[in-house]
Structure formats: structure tokens, C-alpha cells
Length: 389
Image 1 (tube, one colour):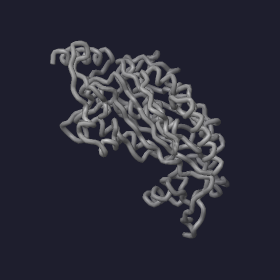
Image 2 (cartoon, helix red, strand yellow):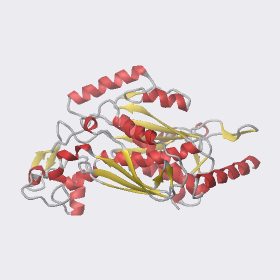
Image 3 (cartoon, helix red, strand yellow):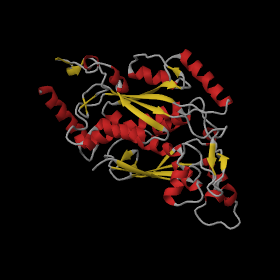
Image 4 (cartoon, one colour):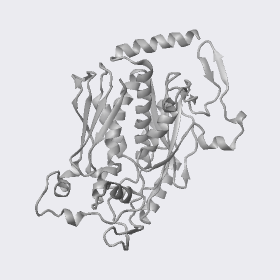
């Protein structure tokens, strides 16, 4: 059975909900770790007031008993604390005399799903679009990815992330062991490894906020311990790097993705791009470099998986751009919803969990099994086969 999930819920509704199907039985869950990952998503310099209101925790309402997965679908819930202020506006039942008309959104915001979604679904209140298209949905996606992350950890696979760039400020490259990278970036307000860059980024975000603007950036995810051969070359939709790219592009505000050196490969010669193959008794087959980010032919090659994504500036601005009122068709300035000046550090955490999910899904496709024990045995058998190759 393939690992999959569906989510439901609105940004100002009572809760976000997910059903995760295909998780094997007998995976011991660390509930504190799961909620820690949700907490990480809420951190980061430049976040708005919503993160002060919400203290995200994941409640498990099915599929887990006495701390272990049962193999049944897992039901996850992340409650919205801000719901109490929106009950009349967002109530599922009709409410007479409510102020919902006062909060009707009829001025679409540039860069959002408002106008396209309203036209597609024939909705005259654009709140019905923005409530679901909001990045608040990434909270429940991090919860789903948090389960996948714990599954990967069971087999020695580690996931890290860092911010590479915020606007005009780029972080210097530091080749750190993955455990150190995790620790250093977690201590940083903007998830970088360099203290001086952190200060520059904070000052830059402050300036952007004072100007009523927003700023985007580039984030990177590194996954170590991934077995050789996840994904496949035989069909376009089985290539794991392609599936990871789709997952990253599905994150709110992400407009680009690259694997390894990515777009830089278009500037170099082949001899400067491809990773030479080496062999020794201890490591077996491996690559001299990792410019291709752990992939060849849509399959993992045993090197660390390296993925980068670019996040555009959040389109909700406190100096609104021009838009058109869908009632009067007259030019107007776009309505302002509460927003962040910069959510790049949080986006780094979201991308970690999206990538973790795709790798976990590919791991289960490769090794099958309904229980952790069966998967472990299948991996051990495969590793023996690789050792004899």
C-alpha cells in the first residue's frame, strides 16, 4: 500500500485535519518530537502575530495505540486557537444576523489564489478561497511529514534544513556534519550557520517590515543515509527527484526547485558537473563529489540528497498593491490580511517535511512490508545484495 495523506481545514476554521494511510505497524512514535517539529515551523525572525496566537500541537485520533502505529489510517488534528475570534464569520451552519457580510472579501490580492479561485469555483466571497489557500495548511503537512521523519529515523535516515538566502543577503557555504548542521541552524533565528549573516538578515527583515514590504529567499534540505535505488528510471512518474520537485513546488509561495547544483549546471561543462564513481571495500560504490544531489536517473545513488527551493515574497503587503474590486470592477488597493514580513525560516522547516514525506513514500514502495520488522528484514536483504554486487 502506498503512503499517502489528505488534509482538510481552513486557516480560521476550528482545526486542520489529515488522514495518513499506509504507515506500517509497530513504529514507536515520539509525541514530543512530533510537536517539536510543529513548534519549529512557527519560529523564525519576521513571523507575524498569528504565531503568537497559535501554539500548534498534533492530536492523534486514530491509528495509534499505546504509542505504536497499528497499520490502520492515522488521524491527525491541529486545532486553530484563533477560531474563537472567527466563529460567526467561519461557522459551518448559517447564522442569522452575523457580520459575515462585513468580512466578505471582494478585492483580490495580487499574488494570491483569490481571483483565480473565485472565478474557478464561482465564489463571490473570496474568503472561501483564501481560507483554504493560506499557508496555515502547512501546519498539518508538517505533522504528516513529522510521522514520515520518524519512520526514516527508524532506519538511520536523517533530515536537515537551512536557509541559504533571504532577499539580498546570502549565507556563506559551510560543510558541516548533519548533526552539527541541525544543532546550529536550530539555534539561529533565521536558520543559518553563520552568526554574522544572521545579524545581517535580521536587520534586512526589519528594514523590509518598516517599508511595509515582504521578502523571500532560498532554502536547502539535506537527507543523509538514504539507500541506493529509491525511485526508478523506468517511468517519468517513478523518478524520485521529480516527485520531490513536485512536492516542494506544492508548498505555498515556492516558485522554483533544484537538485544538487541545479541551475548552475547550465553554466558548466560536463566534466565540472558529473560525479565520478569510486569503489572501496568499506564504502562500496560511491561518488567523488555530490554535484547531482544524490540522484542519477531519477534514483538515489547513496550520496546525501540535496534539494533547494526558492520562496517568493509573501504577497500580502502592508503597502497594498493595486487590484480590481470584483463588485464594481473599479481599481482599488488590495485588502490586507494579517501576514509575515518574512517566512523563509519557517518555509525551510516545511520543505524538510515535504522532502521527508516523499523519501519515506519511496522507501516503502521499494521495501514494502506491513510492519517495521518486515521492512527492516527487507532492507537487510537488499543491503546484502548490494554488498555482493
